[in-house]
Image (cartoon, rainbow, N blue to C red; front, side, top):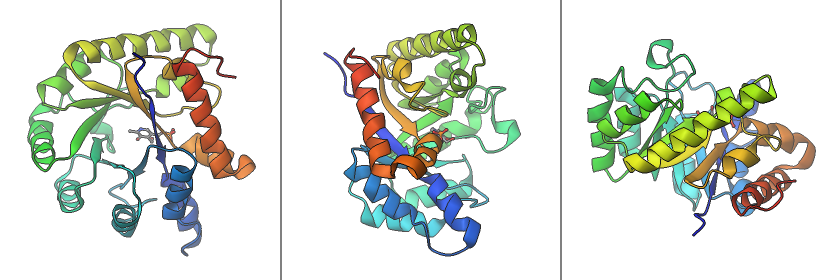
Length: 249
Ligand code: PXP
């Protein structure tokens, strides 16, 4: 049976635009409502340590006002753990923010930070929060994610999205396919995201064991031209077509 593929819409860059002027407009929570109306299954927001886009008050409002799951992306710090435990969002995705936390491809270095991450995963899980780890499609990192007790991984699709040639893209897609298969074997739920667009989403959406894509930058940029709801609807259509084997035009 084909597994459904969820779309999490990342609204960070609505906040980036808002913060450029310092006022309340455009409102990321309004964008969340529009994305949900257009078919988003959930909303993703990254509360960065420097608060460069999403701010604490946005998380308060998202928790209070949206009726779909919130996936809170955050660094694995004591401050962020406190915030997550206070809000108890549906999911937390632990992401690297500092150079020493990441592998060369930009994912979280779970293997190198297992002792730090394991208690964090445990505390979040004990609070009923579904924890995912944002990692490159590297076998060691998947094994480490399982070892620290995370139920979910999100595969970093940046190397695939940024590949400069067809051959490089095919190689990066192969790594994503292999990692998704490894996740299935390890009993990890598999998500993916970063740099996905209308042009490159279909091959990733076609990987049957990936059950969620988190997409932000492209959707917000394209929304300037098509409108947010039309953009989200178009992405949904492409994802669904690829998942069911239809043409992802
Ligand atoms: N998933 C995670 C864990 C992220 O940190 C981000 C933002 O970098 C995304 C998905 C979405 O990436 P993009 O904005 O490039 O679509």
